[in-house]
Length: 324
Image (tube, rainbow, N blue to C red; front, side):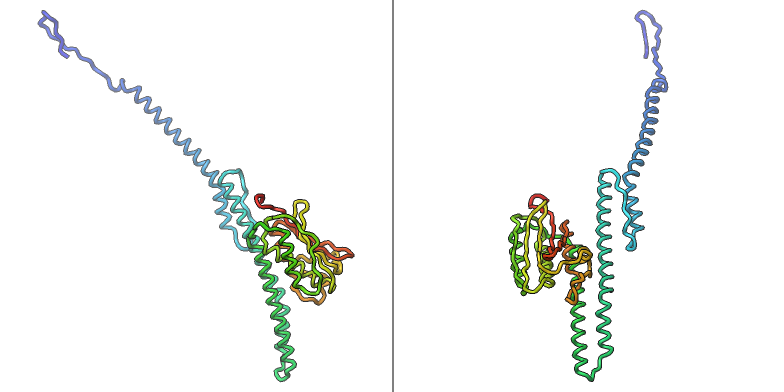
């Protein structure tokens, strides 16, 4: 910048020099510090994210590994549930799904085993009749035809019973509000069609509860049919219902021969029959179906016997509409 002074012919120059490097040193230092800190923060965030992602995805990796290991021969493995986050909820849901799958597979295996075991005898009988069949003797042909038809009918009833039992164990219930008193009268009307006994109602529960009406009628009617088969001809059979101790009790009381103590639990299993059954027909599945229907309602079926007869009772939770 030129400089002059009045009255002085000399001229001068005013110069200012700026060292940009030194002037920008603080900014450069700040930027380097920021870059270093930012780099460290990115690394730390990356490490934390990797750790968190690893912890969150660990159950999913275990689920994937288990799904690869699991097979039809072994459905018992389950994933440990840790915490209460969304992944833990998903893990619990998958475990519940595996429980249902395992139950279904076991039931189907049991069904196949039962069918194979129970159909051997009637098939052997039919084959034996055909092998010994003398086509020249009308009486032998008629006898073979009668035996064959009876055995085929027995096999058909057996398959129907097994199918019904499996359906009860695997299908969801259609719960609706049911008037137990009206249900009791309905069952009396159905049971009264079984001739040979005097049917009556000894109690009606004044309650409305959530039940699968058709399934409960099926179970209760099966108990009535059992009583009609084994009680002395002409003897009275009582049907009753009541609410006690938070349960709905549906019972059938007969005056038949008391069932032996050793048989009271066994008769509710598949193909088990009491010693008093004798030559009476039946597949041994009726009471097993009753027990399965009660269990599907979170209930049970019990048997009480004394010198006066037998009392079969279905115990069901007294779930009312609005309180499930």
